[in-house]
Every structure is written in C-alpha cells, then in structure tokens.
Image (tube, rainbow, N blue to C red):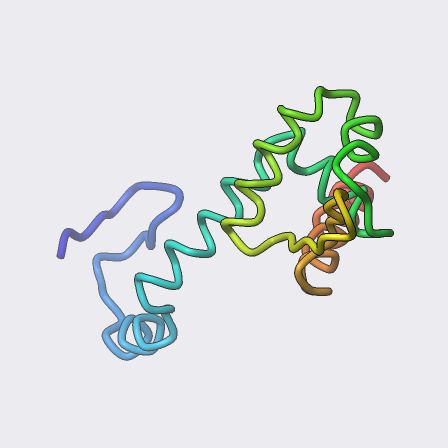
Length: 124
C-alpha cells in the first residue's frame, strides 16, 4: 500500500493503522449491494426522476397526472417510470386502463426528505 506524506486529505505521518483499516473494511457492504445503492443514487441524480419521486412521495398518481405535474409528454414519463420501477423505487397497480404509481416504500420518501433537508439546512 502506498504511503503519502503531504496531501491535505491524507495523514501527515507515514503510518498505517492496521486495526482501523481492518475494522473499516469489515464494515464495508458487499460489492453487489454497493452497486445497487449507487444505481439508486444515479437514478436520483436526474431532475425529472427526482421530480416524479417527489410528486409520488405525497400521493399515488396515474401517468397522465405525473406528466402534467412534471410538464412532460406521457411517453417520456413512462420511460422514466420504467427505469424507476426497474430499480424498485416505484410500484404500480392497474385499475381498468389506468396505471396508478406510488413509491415502493417509505424509505424512498425518507431518502428524498433527507436530501431536501440537507439542502435547506445549508442555505440558512
């Protein structure tokens, strides 16, 4: 392992802390789970998908309603919903010819709220 002496983000002394490194490594998530979490954040990094999730955090909406809320064509919204469904961020139920979308679970709304709260706290 390389040792660094002068980088401001690194230790200033030439040393390693084997016990700390071992503990940190043991706390790391399995690679597969890391990939899944980063995929969720990648999907959240799109403004349109974030707006869709934010709208769905308060209520169930059909595709045409979501399209009106985010001011996009239904086909474009359907594409975004397909991606969000694939990541299990949203779910839907059919009612006749309508598909009603909602968040897959409360953790997604909490994640959005944490992001929003973080931004609002930093603006004060």
